[in-house]
Image: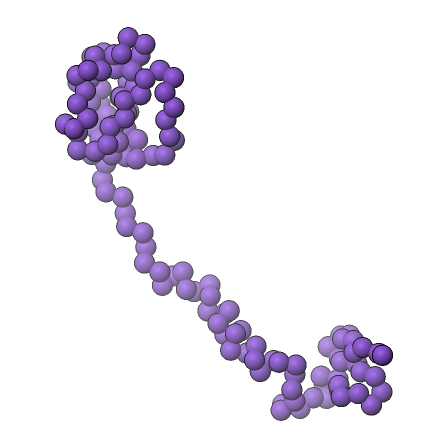
Length: 125
């Protein structure tokens, strides 16, 4: 059995076969499923434009953390004086050796304590 081969855009078939070179095929010739692929090619052409139609992610709310004012108020104080419920955003109290996540939250207040349980630094994030 001799199988058809494709070279340079021409289809070759065994002698007396059903294939003919594409150059000789008319506009109504069955081009091996090309009629089925045409609608999908239009869809594929539109795909790069679709992300422009998507709604944008909402912007992050403005930061409510004032690092300078918090440092002036809490630096060197005992950790027992920190009341997380008194702050509008999330609060993290970090002791030496504590593991913390590296995600950034501009509204979060980080109180880093020293070995004597006093506030060593105050950062936002």
